[in-house]
Length: 223
Image 1 (spheres, rainbow, N blue to C red):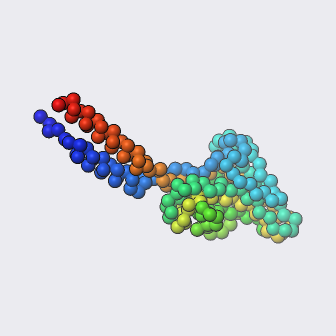
Image 2 (cartoon, rainbow, N blue to C red):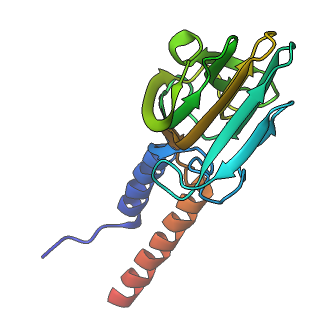
């Protein structure tokens, strides 16, 4: 015969479950980019700062239906054509965690003064950043308008990322008359740990109470 266990044993087991469940929340690796492949057919999820440049969705993309083009031209003043996937997973990221950014790119940014920057920001919840980093530490100079090139960049989030992570694509022209650039982007991902929401302690206590009631009911029935 299996010896019966009293309510004390039940509550002890529930206390252990509560302690384990209300500890450090677990995390899962996820892609936090929003509409990174532009498959919505528009710039949903992106914040646009074209200045005097243009930002367009076109088809086909590098593998899916759509992709984005950023073009800019200077008549002598410096201009930045910027597209941001901003404040992603705010409140759910792990400070200092690895993050891998991938994207496909093609185009031309080789005219005098034309450059491309891929930038990652760890945002503070009240505004500002705890870290800002540029892929390769400097500009890129794509020079193939036909063939796509895939990129992968692994780095770490900053010490405070309560405001989420922001990926910024910038196609820029310096103060060089005649500077121009046209660059396509597609298949953008931002993969990192996203914290799971812990189950509130009240839920576990409620569960403990139910188990206790079940135990009481069984003891009365057995009596």
